[in-house]
Amino acid sequence: MSAPSTAARLGRAGLIILLAGQLLPMIDFSIVNVGLDAIAQSLGASPAQLELIVAVYGVAFAVCLAMGGRLGDNLGRRNLFLWGVRIFAVASLMCGLANSVWLLLVARVLQGVGAAFIVPQILATIHVCLRGREHTKALGMYGAIGGLAFIVGQVLGGLLITLDIAGSGWRSVFLINIPVCLLVLACAHRWVPNTRGEKRVTVDLPGTLLLGLTIACLLFPLALGPVWHWPWPCLVLLAASMPLLWLLWRVERRQEQRRNFPLLPPALLRLASVRFGLVIAILFFSCWSGFMFVMALTLQSGAGLSSFQSGNAFIALGAAYFISSLLSSTVVEHFGKVRTLMFGCLIQMVGLLALMLTLKLVWPHPGVWNLIPATVLIGFGQAFIVSSFFRIGLSDVPTEHAGSGSAMLATVQQTALGLGPILLGTLLVQMLHLAPGNYLNAVLVAVAAEFCLMLVLLSRTLLFLRADRRRQTRDAARQA
Figure 1: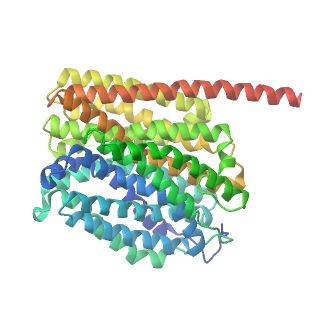
Figure 2: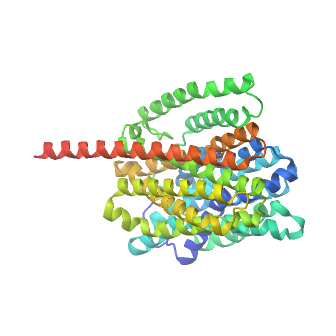
Figure 3: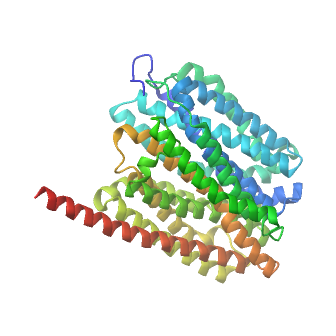
């Protein structure tokens, strides 16, 4: 990475512009959830298509994330940031004007590509332009944006749909991005420095293409198979995912042997902490996005809440996440990153049990106030898990491979966020097929499935902690 210099000075205005750019793609993970019922009514979208509308954004984001980071290193980070904002603006306009589900899906994929060009440039620019206290404060703001974006997305989306500005309805949740994009584009040239990497790195196009094909072969059959009663093309695509995954591994090993820059570096996958970080990403982030999808659909389609009421139902969760994320560094310092992860899992699991009990007691009238106790616990637990994710995953990664390690963890993280609505959404839909209209039973089964996955993560954490203690004991014995 290029060293910071006077020419590469990032001031307060530039940091605000970068964080505004970060807010855009992160809001779009949550803002679409409150519009699901309105989209279904307007475009006649099936539950499987709603799953895809949420999922394809995260998957496109994941597949192009590492490529976006490397293009920024080569072509200039501000240049790629601005191109990402332009693509995101055009895609948001396409989403707002879409008159069919399939056009909306294409636009959501394009949004994901734009987001993948935007996000890597923000952290990289902060890293090379700031030092000391300014760097620490900027990273704190960067981390806190996740909780803020969650709250803003849920509440703003519900408010916009309720206001129905100029009859735009759900389309306003996408069109609102355009003025923000235009403002960022107008200001970035003046206040955001254009930094580059110290040396040009190759973009792993074969790895990116194979990763995209592998995820597509998993995503589309899982989303459409249950609805179409598993026709043979779905089964063939699902079966093809394993050979494609094997081929991806071979290609990445060859890239590494040629001293190129593979998308998923095999050398890092040999580290136990990295492998455990990938387990956290797959289990937790798929649960997180899947939970938000099934809860939003249940509250709107099942309990009859408006988009505004549905968005407000998660304010407490977002606020608890935001506060907990600010406390997480202190907790990690006192208890360690692995124990913090365990605390997060336990707190969230208690919250999930409390949510299931609450829904049984208050159904069919769940609301903002009666969901607060359970969602606060869930939000607190989630923040502890997220704060531990990169700390654990990168703990043994050599400094010279920190960029590759971060990109690999982030790629799997975004893939899981895209696949979550497919997995828990499909379970919800299947339960509704068995008992039409019984949303309470369907959402309880989906939340119970998430609880089981979190139990798997907790068990895996205990095994990792035990193995880590054994390793430390062996190292101490060798030094003695």
